[in-house]
Length: 104
Image 1 (cartoon, rainbow, N blue to C red):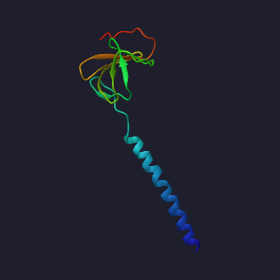
Image 2 (image 1 turned 120 degrees about the vertical axis):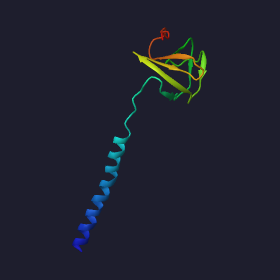
Image 3 (image 1 turned 120 degrees about the horizontal axis):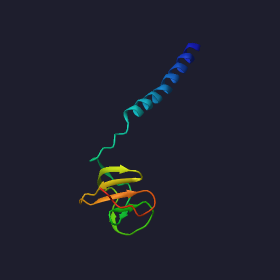
Image 4 (image 1 turned 30 degrees about the horizontal axis):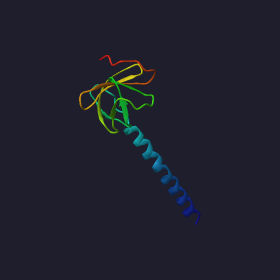
């Protein structure tokens, strides 16, 4: 009977280790891709832009861009992300004070 209990404990220990091993393996496989100019991404939220600029403050003026719109990454400079919309319009997504214009 004691050997049965020892085997049972050993099996429980081994099965408890299996999920943690598979979790470690999945983390190493899911490394983020490098962001390169020309990569296509999708907006995660709806946004409005005006004069080629989307200020991250919450206001509703200008042209509406719906969620899941494909945008082409054009670059990053300071707090600005530069993207191109499907219609060819270039916009700057600025995280900070307003007044910055798209310079590319």
